[in-house]
Length: 113
Length: 267
Ligand SMILES: Nc1nc2c(ncn2[C@@H]2O[C@H](COP(=O)(O)OP(=O)(O)O)[C@@H](O)[C@H]2O)c(=O)[nH]1
Ligand SMILES: [Mg+2]
Ligand SMILES: [Zn+2]
Ligand SMILES: [Zn+2]
Ligand SMILES: [Zn+2]
Ligand SMILES: [Zn+2]
Image 1 (tube, rainbow over the protein chains, first blue to last red):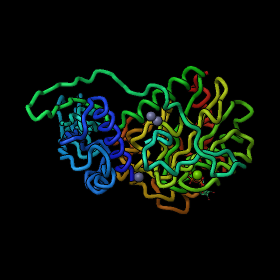
Image 2: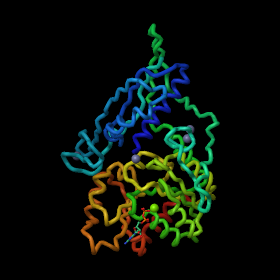
Image 3: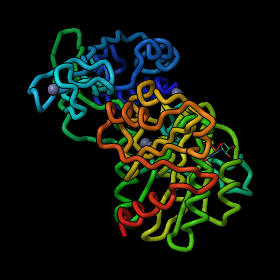
Image 4: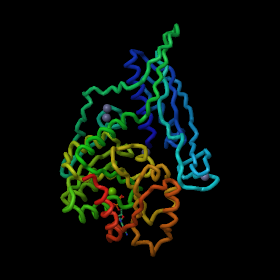
């Protein structure tokens, strides 16, 4: 389950930033996670308590901002919602599309003390 | 995240050459080097009286993996090494495909192989039997290779200029999709014994690959697998995919891939 790697990646970023800021711990963390990022939110919730145990993130509030996947069809010049990469333009069914958003997976902000 | 950065999950990652004990610990990549990535993040000191501060980061969660991938990519480019990351479900034929390539081309090109597997040395032993330099990375509980493991393995291999680096990832179509290793091309292999809707079930993997190999075409007469339908599904996910239809055991279709490799190698 790669969500453990994802959670540990978040922990590593938080540990680094807390050390750099000379803080003690994180009160809250804001994450941006796109629906096309490949991160299963249920799995992330499941591994989170284990991953943050005895780290600066233990007890921190986690706020997840879910970013809806969006594709753009160049032929029709329309934007459409994507649940996964197989979704194509609902109007003309062209295969070619530009992914406008939804691949995000990032730590947006941390509140530390 | 990577084998030697001190993240707890990776305690049991091991890197070894065939014939070495698997207890050999991963060689440390230089994490004593300054490793803090001070690019463009701003510390906005909100001075609330309780002393809390908000740090705006916008940092990619896989930042650390991506640093290793970039490091690997720079190394491969400098040495003009062409690198492939092979992914598939277990048993689709990654190792057999590699064996076939090495047998047919090893007098023409210098190959290097990194074998990823959770537990065993078997695949590395199969490659070693062909007298091609190989390193096994055992990921333990980890279900994918990451950039740091490849950094370690490449150090162990010490490849020559102009070679071809083949990386067989852990057999799994989900987890390796997210982790850039620094490769030039990702090859996803699907075999005719699997469902032809695999590209729709595992779209992330097909989206992130450049080449799709349909393997075990020798079995088509006995199966319901529809090659054209598979390609149609795969193109919905990724219209730029390049397809090769092969039998890794019999050799059918391999020459097309070799021609492509000859004209797309870096040197
Ligand atoms: N019939 C047939 N069997 C194949 C072909 N390629 C691989 N196999 C068999 O599929 C099994 C798994 O192959 P392997 O290369 O170990 O798969 P990996 O787990 O992806 O590395 C082995 O028994 C191979 O002999 C092929 O083209 N045709
Ligand atoms: Mg194998
Ligand atoms: Zn996994
Ligand atoms: Zn359209
Ligand atoms: Zn590191
Ligand atoms: Zn590392």
